[in-house]
Structure formats: C-alpha cells, structure tokens
Length: 337
Image (cartoon, rainbow, N blue to C red; front, side):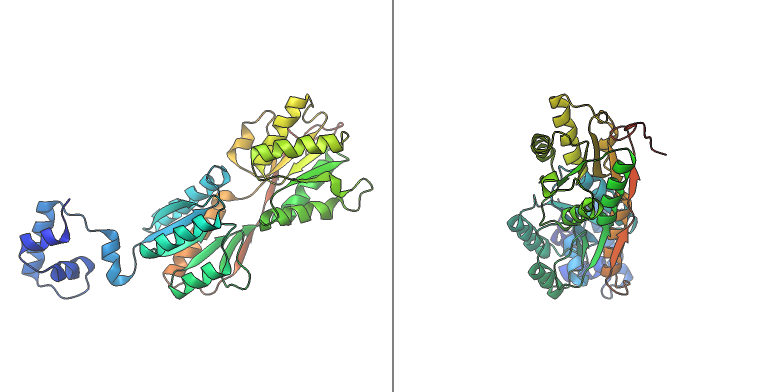
C-alpha cells in the first residue's frame, strides 16, 4: 500500500506539498498539481481519512455506543443512524459496551485518539465526567433515552411512561383484571419510567400489590424467571405487561412450558416494537417505539452539532403506539377495535 511519502518521492515534491494538495489548505501551482495527480494515479494511493482530517480536525466519522447489540432494538436503531449519516457523507463506528462502564470508558479513550467528529450514546453507564471530558475536547455528544445529571446534552427519547399506561389500558379493555409487570433494571431511566406508568395505572385498583411487580433484566431469560415467580405468587394473574419485548418473549416461553394458554388464560404485552414480535407464537402485542425515526433523528442532531447549525440542546420526546396482536386479543369476549 502506497504512502504519502511514496507519492512525494515520485512527484518530486515534499510531503508538506502533498498534504496541502490533499487538504486544499494552501497554494500549489498547476504544474505541481498535475505531477501529484499523476503520482497518485500511478501508485493507486488512497489518502488516510484520519491523517487528512488532522489539519481540519474533521474526519467525517461518528461513533455509536450501544449497551447490548444482542437486543434487536439496537441493530434496528443503528441501521437508521447509519442510513442518515451516509446521506450526509459520514461513516459510523459501532461500539458495543455490554453495559460496562469500564469498557465504555475504554471506547471513549480510543475514539478521542481517532479524531472522531461526534458520539451518539445509547448507554446506561455514561456519566457526567465523560460528557464534561468530551466537551473539553470539543467532541459533540447526543444521547438516546438518558443523559447524565447536570449536563447539557441533546436527548432523543420516546414517551415511556405514556406507553406503559397505553399497555395497561389495553389489557383492561381486553377484560384482564389482575395485571402483573416485569420491569427492567431501575438504573435505566426507560425501565424506571415504564414501571412508574404501570403503577400509576393500577395502584387505585383493589387487587393492586407490590407483589405483582418483579424485576427482569431486559433479556429473554430474565422474562422467563420473572414469569415463573409471578405465577407462583399469583396463580390468578390474567395479564403480564413486560418492560421490553425480549422479557415479553420470555414470558410467552415460560407460560407455554407451564401449559398456560396465551391469551386465553394470561395475556402478554411487551414494549419496544422490535421485528421479533411479529414471529412469536402467538404474535406479541407491544407498545412500539418509532425505532427508525429515533435513530434518524439522533443522527441528524449530532451532525448539526458537528457542523455548528444546532441552535440549542433540547430533549426530543417521540410518540409511541400500541400494536395489538394475538397475545392479548379476544379476552372474555372483548376484541380490539
């Protein structure tokens, strides 16, 4: 692979002259330009994007840090981020933090050295010190769903609390009378808001008790374990609202193993709207987030910050929508309208 020094030697000019030509950062006469161009073509030289960006401090590269790439929600989100970034001439580096603060900080250090133009955090471990550190380095940051306290940062999120209320209202309308909730880890603001929305919707009902709520881990296995515990505590539960779709899939699996009919005996509703919900048996009712729109918006906001056209940081809250399917329909003669 040819280097910039090889090009300079063949063209008979200095490396600095080649750099000025590539970065359009200074005068190069026409005759010299032609020599450089011929040398580049002869050597099939491809300029290093990072090296070219050093002069202007811009590489047209952004990073997306995700907490768990195995959750189908995040690949769907990443697709939208990449689509929009590509439209504006940016490439995307994908980083999976596994919800580990140490791993995330390691990514941040590496990204800073690569002169990244900006970072999108869909992270549960980002802290104020990280945001402050990147601000000092002049690296724009946009967050998905959460933002560290006392930090100014644009955030894109969906209406989690309202979505939980939609789920409970739907289950009640289907004839369900004892609705349990599998909630996600409470250090995640999304899980906390969905739990709050559930409690607001059921706390006035005469059957309500904290024992109808069990923590899961936003994964299928966590949904299985939580469902087993719920059914042991309350065999008369007739609906389960899970705080994300993967835990709802776990609930379906656990109920199937127990010989419990869905939705005949227990209705199940998830949250997120991932593609998997259309291929479960029965198909899963869910509160759908506008996943693609969230990814597209967060990407556009970051690019505006990079290019200096974003007027001010703010929080963008997107609507959610209930998608009724087989896992909750036809309960006690009720049917979705």
